[in-house]
Structures are given as structure tokens and as C-alpha cells.
View (spheres, rainbow, N blue to C red):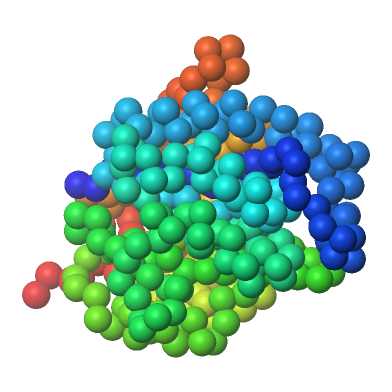
Length: 302
């Protein structure tokens, strides 16, 4: 049995952020206004405290591996990334090993994406088997389970555009990578959902633009589970009705009154999930909802 912890969308920020003149011509301006005046900052005002408690919780519950599905930062500044990596314990040997992918806020503008701020700060959590020198996708085996990191985040110029895309080239590499993996459940870690709770794609400005192609290629590659964040409320969808494998959204681990993370116990091709939520009164995470899933791709008895 493999025991995993899954957290996401911590949205930490730094003071000072490190503004430069060119930032005034990017969506960071509207992002900052949302943060300062439209409520996002208030919703995440306790994020540093909760993230610190989260890190200590992750170190003490006997997990085999950690899963982080992105959005470490608010506006993708290098200062935010460095702080987030430190707060989350990247490189801390008291924590279990981890796998991480960027979210759209981590590649908020082109300079964040091209500068590879996330990849530099989270390098210890990005180790695995790759195709050539390409960063994504990559895979690591934990017990009998393959964790496969797929990057679905991209920078966008339009201030209201928070959409993502995996792209044909990365999907081709996913086929090549998975063709060489040994037997075992295949679990994708990515930032974006395939479908939202109504089993439909998100609105165009928030969705994974190539969701249907990604779904089909992932299914053909034997993927049995899709772990993600992006949406800040958690949900679980069983396979069926446009979904050949189940996705699990962990939601935001630090947003006020939504804060939580998941622990998964994977025994064979069956998963038992336990949601743990932050309790401000005790300053600790406590057990909440439970759920169970059957992963797709289980081989039939011969």
C-alpha cells in the first residue's frame, strides 16, 4: 500500500515582490488590484500560517510521497517562488520526497515562465524519468504506483485569461514516456482539471483548452487517476460520462474556510481518501470527509 498527501493552491506572496518597470505592462497590474482591493488578499491572509502548519503535518503522518499540484504563488514573482519553496519545505529532509508541477499563477507572465522560476525553486520535487532533456512530463515510482507530472500551466497576456494547455508536443512525450514504464497504476499530477463538478469543461477563460485531447491521450496511456487543483473547492468525480478515469480536485490548501489537503491510501488499484481540514481554533489539521475510488487501468486476470 502507498500513502500519499496531496495539497495545492497555497498562493503565498512576498514583501517586497520585486516589481520592475516592465511589469506595469502585464497582467500583474490587474492581478495586484485583485489581490489588494477585490478580496483575494483577504481570502489568503492566513496562508503563511496555514502553510507552516501544513508542512509540519506532512512531516509527521508517515506519507510515502507528497503531491503538490501548483499555484505556489500569487503573481509569479521570483521572490514569491523562493519564499513559497522555503515555507513548504522544499529540500527539507524531514519531509517525505515529493512531486510538483506549476500552476497558472506560477507562470503568471511570460518572464515567470521563461525564467523557469518554479523549476528552479522546486527542483528537488521535480526528479524522475524523462524523455531526453525535456522537463515535462516526468515520472517517478512510489511503491507500485507511478506518479506522472504533466505541465498544464502557461502564461497568458489577457488579464481575464487563466486557461491552460498541455500541447501536442508534451502529449507525444507522454506517450513515449508511458510506453516505457513498468506495470502499476498510473497517476497524473497536473494543475488543471479535465472537467469541473458538473462533468463539463470550465469556461473558456479558466479551462484546460485541450482537455478533450489530453483526456483521450491520457486514457490511451493507461492513466488511472488525475490529481489536480486550480479550482479552490475540492471534489471527486468517478469515471464514466466523458471521463475514462476519475479525477480528484484537492482545492486550495490555504484559502480561508476552504483550507485542506488529502491523504490517499492506494492498495492495488483502489484508493481510500481522507480529507484533512485546518481548524483555526486549534491551529491544526483534523480529519473530515472520506471517499473511495477505483483507479482505471487495472489489468484483468489472465
